Length: 493
Image 1 (cartoon, rainbow, N blue to C red):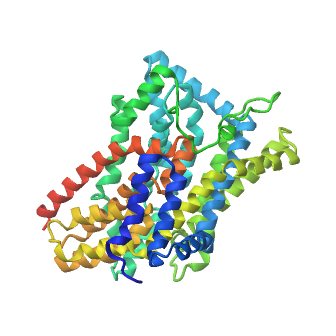
Image 2 (cartoon, rainbow, N blue to C red):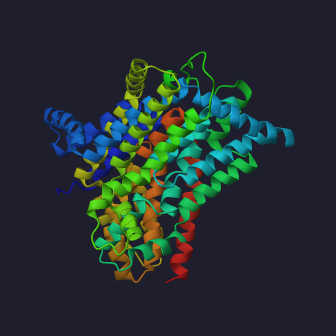
Image 3 (cartoon, rainbow, N blue to C red):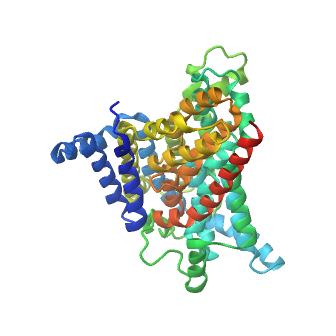
């Protein structure tokens, strides 16, 4: 790989700054991709432009990318199904009973309870981040709207309960991926190391704790406080100039008339999607397992070797099929009606699929530029053991922020952080935790993060508004984390 030096960090940094300034996320990402290829084409505009086109086409060479984009589009069909079948209305009716109960206890308390329920739901769905944020946004958006809670708050809760829970409860593809990275570094007992590092993985813990504090104290800061004030005073769930990630056709489709509202018409398809995720992980990873000592060990190893992108795609397809069978048996919809809804749902989520395409394309371009490798190599020579965990956290954060991927950051940084910890004699579990936490923090702050994009989509929030309102809370958690790593760096060395 050619070394582009400082130039390698310019495209993602410029793209992120422009995105936050202009809110034109599609144009900005396209510019970032083009600028990356322009650098790699020795500033030849024609060659760089043609390479940009090929770079976006090449996104589909990755089966994982293609599956994720398909998943993002098919989600629209599932959302239309549960809306049209009155499943959403039925769920709201049931939740309203809970709201009414707490409202009788203390006025205004129902807003707190619903937000806590949304957070708890996100934490329980630790098996996969996309499923977690998607389910939280879909289930709770109508209730949040009714209680006049801004969409930005729902996106924040969905985002802050997905990746943090997946990294803290690593019995999923995340844990398997990280253990695989530790094995490649020649470490024995990777599972034990991963479990030991959880206690020092401060940022995900703080991210969840901050959400709890914000909900219970009803105290917001920065742009989120403005969003709460806007919704409280005007009833507007979004800013006037906002562009929700989810089409109003999906969020406000009129339910079919003349049918009864049943909560299970929403809960069963979504529960099917969630339940099928670990099943599909086992299925896709089963044949890759070698030397299993028992059936349970085979299952555990299979989950670790399974394909996350295949699993979410199969899960949403299964959920759509279950919904079709349910609604057809109840005579809610005819076959042609269901096919029309599938096509309509896919078309309404094409903007999301395009955004995922651009996010993957800029990630690939940054990889070829060597953005992550440059930042990591630059830091090698001037680190001391005491400062190592804090600096590793900061560098991992910057790489994840610039590339929009925590997994990519783990892959880059684990290969650098582990040898550095061994050379400097720094505590290995602390350095591993700093690497993982930095990836989550940077991903949380980045407008090109696929997790944040899906959170915005599921919550029908403007994406840049979601990033802006979440950023102050993330920075507080990140700042405290750096201080804690500095303290422990001196205490444990």
